[in-house]
Image (cartoon, rainbow, N blue to C red; front, side, top):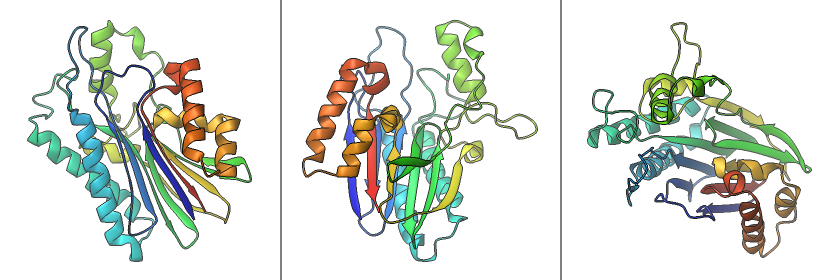
Length: 273
């Protein structure tokens, strides 16, 4: 089994501190990535040098890996959601320690710290996975994508931007749609790990059989659009000795071509089974 992992800042000027985080377990075949959700600030307001969203991504990954390592030998399907909930509770604890609760936040520049995330545990030729929002998991077999976790915005209303001005739209998105469910428990927004109990309802989980030669990708949203690039996929099929340099070349070229699509901060873990 070969493992490749990388965290890259955006290749254009990024006003934020690092907000992605990942861990590859040094004990078992367990992997997690998280993307701290940037807060919104008025024009002219400096983004903090130390990001609470980045700290939440780090805390979440550490707690998830520790718990997954502890459960590995007896791991079962039901552990997936339980491990997520333990990580989510750690985020709740951090938010409370920072004075950020539903009673104190304004849903804009003083809001809950949160993160998207994806997770993978490989055991006995099975891939146990979960994904939340736009951090994802994908599996390629003989060059073809045979699985990709669901997108994070499929339950989000398309007409939400028509409701208000710029600042008000952000507040509405966070207040009305983050981890939101209707009275029947139906998903009506998007999910992130921010300590809210309803975050678990947005969690996508599953167990897949894997074969020798499969490529498994864990990524935050900054690498999402790369998964459909032939030169990107071919790189990991060939797995050259200078794979780091070749990936850097691809990222530089694509992020220069379209910064909004390819240039964001991004994390990637690739496992060749």
